[in-house]
Length: 349
Image (cartoon, rainbow, N blue to C red; front, side, top):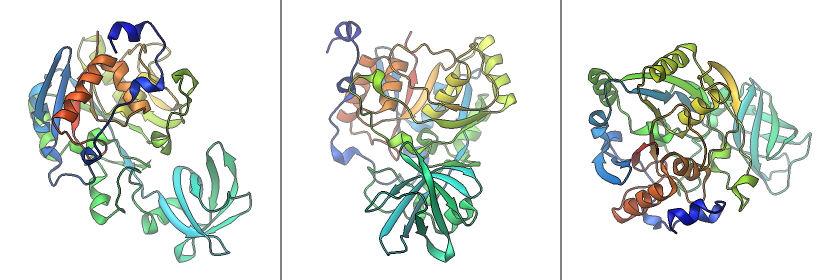
């Protein structure tokens, strides 16, 4: 559909659909993180590169913003006292023994229901918040997850988690536990690339956004305006906010590593245009027409059809530009999604 026709009507879910050959969905990471491909998406130009080429695409004055969240082994398997199987995906740790979780079982749990796990761990259902159940554990949740949890691989990865996934579904700079999905743009970075960027003069800072289970939830409304995002917690250190605001005032480019970094930065600048430090919740849903205030360039992976993240990158670089980039990537046999290849996107004028 022509860009002019798109601009003349409200965008719907169907505008963000595309056909992807199943064999292009990466099921395993490459042996070398930095061996992934990189598609540089600029206005009217697509360049096929390697991720290691990123060093030459960034200027000394660019400021990289990383998300240092750490993926927890959030998937637990247990059973009811009656013996029925239960699968719980811990979405957020609220207190040391209290969590929000998606629960899969034969019958919807009711308040007071018990779920038994290994080694004497158990949880009681205290209530429900939207799609999530409130679970009270008898032990520290993070300790239980570390002992018997499983890496929460995305649903499009068709194999159970393995010891390799514990390492590879995690960035090399992960520091703060709390995510149930990896900030996948960061999976391509290696210590060698980080050192090369530093030697090149590129500055970097960190923030934290704990990616929630809502990242895999489908958009259920054909009209984009009808969709509501799940809230996610983020925190921006004062040093990071100061560095970003200083760079923007100096006319330097802000490069978000991943859509999570972008959403945190843009959320923190919604009121005044200046990035504010501190912790907050964001349910920011970015669709075409959004006015970006902070981020100039975005490093990201390829996203699912009809997903909120595909809508975000379409807002950032333009609907037609992203359509052309995805068609090119499919034709050139790029690897898609979490363990797949990456893009460097320039923001549309």
